[in-house]
Image 1: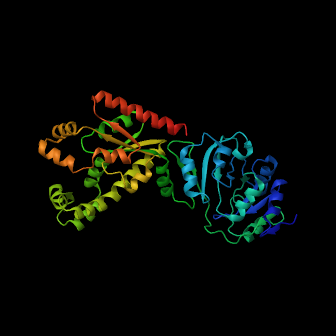
Image 2 (image 1 turned 180 degrees about the vertical axis):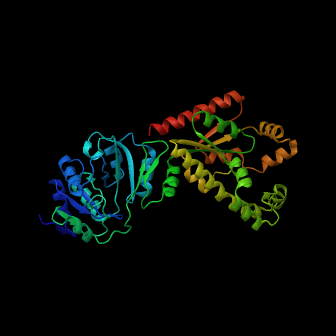
Image 3 (image 1 turned 135 degrees about the vertical axis):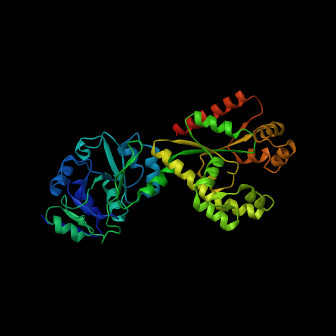
Length: 405
């Protein structure tokens, strides 16, 4: 057999694949040894040529994220999020396998790794074939992975039908493999894509509900309802106060902008409050410093939640509208309440005077602002029980709508 070196005639390579042949293909990581992933005999040849143990499954190359549903089943939202973030690219996503995939590909298991390579020639091959490609690295088992077509030919010249030559691979390191069929997910092989990038991207798989409104409206009760209905509950104020005690980099930045605001690692709240209360520019500076740390902490919470299989979260924050965090929200819920009820709650909760409570409320946005900018409004104008029931009904509805697509 003569191994053809193909540079531009990808249709020739597609014909070889369709006829059960083997073609070495370029990717951004290393060259792969490809065959029709739905053709058992063709896949058998991969094992034979590589000397690959039959107990080791093969991943499948696919041309687009829609292949997740075509060749996987019960595909988690996290898989779609990762495909959106990193495909085409050096990430193999393990999902439950569709029954159409031959057992030989799965090595007797029930999961399959899917990968969309960042190579125009290989993507064209996939489109022309209309089939997934089983494609482990194009080297004998145990040998170094090939980074050029010449490397492939040094291993398999005369043993395979063709190699598509697209020059050296950009990365030269295998793809990272992440298993999303287990909770928490597992990185099975650390490759070209960093595990931390995967973790951060998975935070976006969580459906995030924003809860906002003025002081004393009942946002805490709404957040408690969301948590009781299965959502991760995030109190932005609590996150901030925790960072004030634990986040040295944030405290350092605050002290640089407001000298004396931090003494021996402890935030001096009264001093800082006096510096920003009547100075809008100073308050904006403080917000700019703290916001990025709060968002990073929230991202960590969402990533951990997603890793454990969580799909829903709710965040309570007085300032969500018009912030970058709003773009992350699946929906935004505004909570409103009569002014006198808010004053009474604030007085009871914080021990402040009625005059101070009223001034504080008047300094915030009116109900109409939230009614204009929010997707849903919860009006806390009756009994606590009635409000809690209204919260439960809304959050159940939002979760059902999301689950049903």
